[in-house]
Image (tube, rainbow, N blue to C red):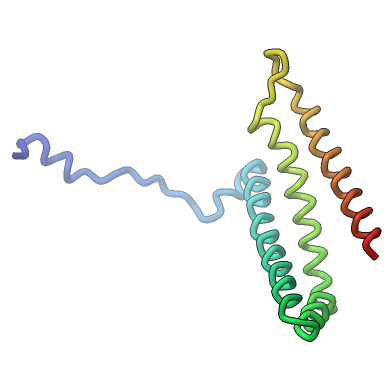
Length: 139
């Protein structure tokens, strides 16, 4: 049974703060955050494009050749450049953010975030060089 003073609680409306669609344009911090999140979408499209390439490769030489012609067309080159810029920006911001998300402790003291960020870059460069060596060696 609902008491008399509880009926008011049922009729209350929650406070909804008004916010413009461009709220993230007000401060540089929010803008850079949204830009970083937007790069995730660009990279997702690139991943789908590469997965499509694998599908075309499985489908045979003719399908593969069609995909290669599509991704090397004059219209696709600016998209590749956009995706490359998005990749670099996303990587840069992620490597800067990672040491603040996962704090590594050595001997009870937190490792300097700059060292963690530099470690990410070293791992990235070493991995890239190894892949280039393996890829170049396969030809």
